Structure formats: structure tokens, C-alpha cells
Length: 294
Image (cartoon, rainbow, N blue to C red; front, side, top):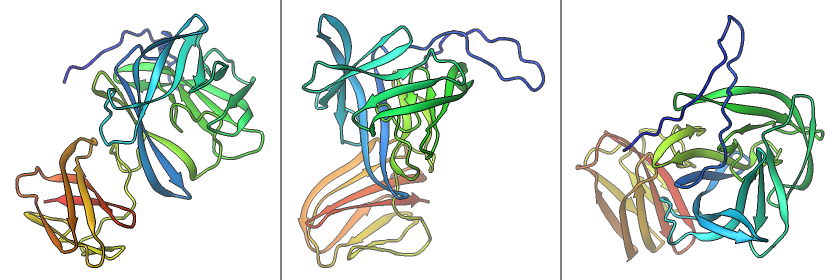
């Protein structure tokens, strides 16, 4: 995997001072993927990936096309067009799908103590944002500007990072409710992980805590966990339609379709030790769980 190292200039740091980035990191030109989880009062309920899928011309202005993929791995060919984004004068603007009206998403040229108004249809519409402080965050050996924000109505503060977006996800600036909404888990650029903001240090959400006992979820028994050789799935009263297993980075290592109402055995003996995630689709809903290979 080829690593990309971006050039930067840093002001010398004295004791007690903060390093501030000097270069401006614009919206990515290509090969960028944002992995975002949906949160419902503390529970991760859905995983989505947004990525750049090409260029487009709207109102005679060039934009980057953003695609949405619900799959574990982002595929620009199968991604659904979501919106268009452009970076102009250190401000990120977007145009929604089936619209020609441009709106402000981020302003990376603000100053501390100022107030910014954002009109975000994916958050709460028109929202006032307070710029509390500006500092830097080190990413892949370089420093990028980080803008720390808050809201007049309270709620959970946001952090905006140049070249990435905010910790709520690329399109959720102004989404100020705590433990409900969205969270940026990972940002990849040119297939390299640049930013990790995940509670379980992976690019995939989990809904069940791991332990050394058998796991019973919605009439499906999964055991043993941790697993060494063979993982057993006893689906009892429900038909399993498909099973997907991914590694900690979200790469699919197994995908199998079924139409069964009995015990399924999955061979883990050739997998490396570590953390995996399993999706089980049955005729009722989707079940997700974390599996440890020992």
C-alpha cells in the first residue's frame, strides 16, 4: 500500500504552545472515502461510506461528485450519486442531489470568537455555529487546522478538520445532539488510513460487547467466541439469507448466500488472529456482531 506524505510548514513550538498548520488542505481531489456510522442513543445502527466518484459541472462551475455506498467496501462504480462539493476560498460548498442551489457546508477561514451560519439539510437546516478555538491536529505526519465549534442551543461540540470535514462525518456539520446522529469512523485517502475516530479502533461499528460466552441474538446462537477453528451459527427459528464477514478495516473476507433454517459452520482456521465482524441477514432483520479469532 503506497503511503502519501503531504508537505507542511510548522511554526516552531515553545513549551506550552500549540503547533499551528500553515498549509491549507483543500477538499480531496480524488480517491477519498469517508466511513460514517449512524448512532441511535449510543447504539451504532448503520454503516455507510461516501467517496469521490468523479467531476461534474453545475451552473458552469466545477464540482466533485460524491457517491454513497451502504456496502462494507466502497465501490465507486456501484455508488449512488449523493451530492456535489467544491472548495472555494477555503470554504466548502455543496449542492444536493436533484437541486441547483449551492449551500455552505464548512468555512476553514473563520477566526476565533466569530459566529457562522450553516444551512445544512442533513442536520437541522439553518444553524448558528460558534467558533470557540482554532488549533491543529497531526495527521499522517503533518499538521492540519482544526476548528473547535459549539452551538447556542447547547449539545455536543464539533471539530472541523481541513481536508476531511468534521467528526460527525463529511455532511453533518451543525449536527449538535450528543449520542444521536452520526460519527465519522475513518477517512481514507489513496487507500491509506489518514484519520481514525472510532470507539473500537476499526472502520466498522459494533452493537454487542464481546465476552467469552456464547452469544444469543434474536434467536440466533453464535459460538464459540472467541473462536479458534470453527464458528457455529444456530439460527433456530429464522431463515438466514446471507452472511458477510469483514476484517477490522472493513474488507470483505467472506460473503455467502443461504436459504437455511439450521446450523451453519464457518471455517475460521485459516484467518489471522484478530477482530472480525459478522453480518447475518435473516427474514426478520440484520444482526451484527464482533468476533475474535484466537
